[in-house]
Structure formats: structure tokens, C-alpha cells
Image (cartoon, rainbow, N blue to C red; front, side, top):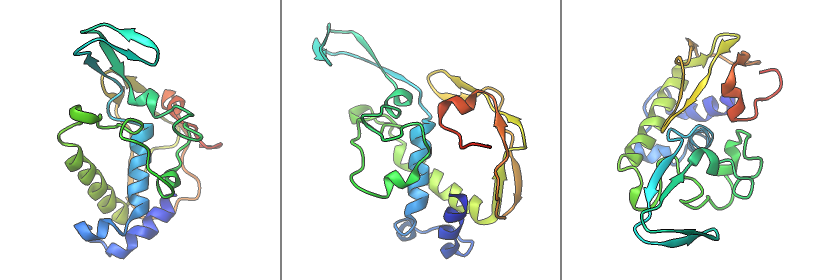
Length: 187
């Protein structure tokens, strides 16, 4: 997948993509969306019911607190086939999921006001980095996750920044970050 993305970015010839060029980078968009689906920056958020309601057959009284978790929603098999696999190609075909099935920045009237800027920054940064460098964790790197309101790592994410190159076998990582998605055998 990394090689395919590097190949797609080659059309930029080392430059930052323009607004128009982003439309011609579908794999970049798919990789970002799939990464945000599996590793959403927000693990959960809460809302207070303005009035009583019924939700999935459960009665909610007025002022009930309801917790919403992209981390859980993004792994529901009724919404995503093979929900724990990193499959960017799911974004390249068919209908995109509803804004209530894909919510790394929230949804509805409470969607993050900076979501468009954040999405642009992520795509721009990834496009610029991957044209110049290969980023790899050191062999055996320990990456533990922490779930609070946000999803993060406990002690950062060690990374080697190498000149751009083809990587035949990614380094093996250890620790509980592997619990968040299906890791291919040998990685």
C-alpha cells in the first residue's frame, strides 16, 4: 500500500498538491480516511438529551447523558466489512458511509469546526512527507495506546525518518496498539 501511495504522489514531482490536484489523489484520500476510521483522534464524546427520546428501543429521559464512540462505531461489522482491517480500497468504491457511520470529527450540529482544515492538513503533510521520506518504527518498537476522550499513545511513537525507499517487509511492532486493528502476519 505504501508503494502504491508513493507512486500516486509521484505526479506531484516533490511539490505540495494544489487544491485541484487533491482530486487526482484518490489513494491519498482513502488512506487518510481509513487511518482516521481505525485510529480516530476522538475515542468518545458525550451529549445530553435535550428532551426524552427512544434510542434503539431504550427510553432516554430528558437530560440523559449519551456517550458516542467513533472507536466503537468504526468497528461495527454491520457498517464496515472486515471492520478491524486496514482497507483503504473500501473508500474507492461504492457509496461512502453516512456521516453517522464515519465520524472521526463528530457529526451533525456538533461536528468539529476545524474538521475541513484538519483533513486538509493531514493530506498535505502526508503528501509532502511521503514524497521525500520513508517513515518506519524501529524493529520491535513498543507502541501502547491510551484511550481517554482522545486516542493517543502512552509514550509517543518512535519513528525512523529515512530517505524515500521501497520497504519489502515492515518492522515488527509490539504492545497493545496491535489490539486496535488486525495486523498482517509477520508485522
